[in-house]
Image 1 (spheres, rainbow, N blue to C red):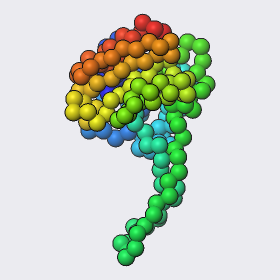
Image 2 (cartoon, rainbow, N blue to C red):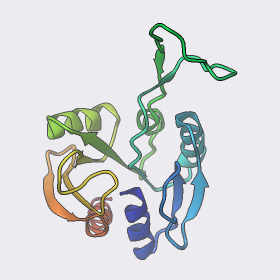
Image 3 (spheres, rainbow, N blue to C red):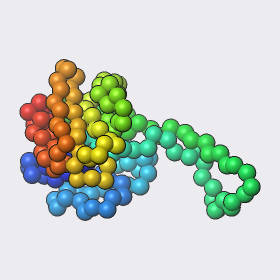
Length: 183
């Protein structure tokens, strides 16, 4: 979805900086690609660019947790169970949107499998977003690793627009159009 939105933003004449983890598709022609691997790298890349951007669209489904420690060498198989302690990662969207300035527009994505709109509304309010895209993942008609998706656009003024199963490029164009209309 992020690459489709980057392409739609380029079509609309926007300058696009695309912060991206590893994917199997090429970045849209004309986008400045900033490759990252970890949630910490993504935070640093987004945080360092946020003050100079007009619109921030956060589509990445960044892991909420990471291992609390990493072993220097391969851990050999043993007879017993192993336990991994996890610690939370920094919430990138919440961190940068907390310092949103007048005129900036922040869009978040909520990838959910249940109570999609409820979680998305809570996330939008808690993270200071101007728009939230409730992304219905786990459905046969689209989501991750598919050319199709099904989303609901939500706004703090209780605005709501459902975009049923459609090509991600068409959904991306609609998202960019709605941002332009509401900025």
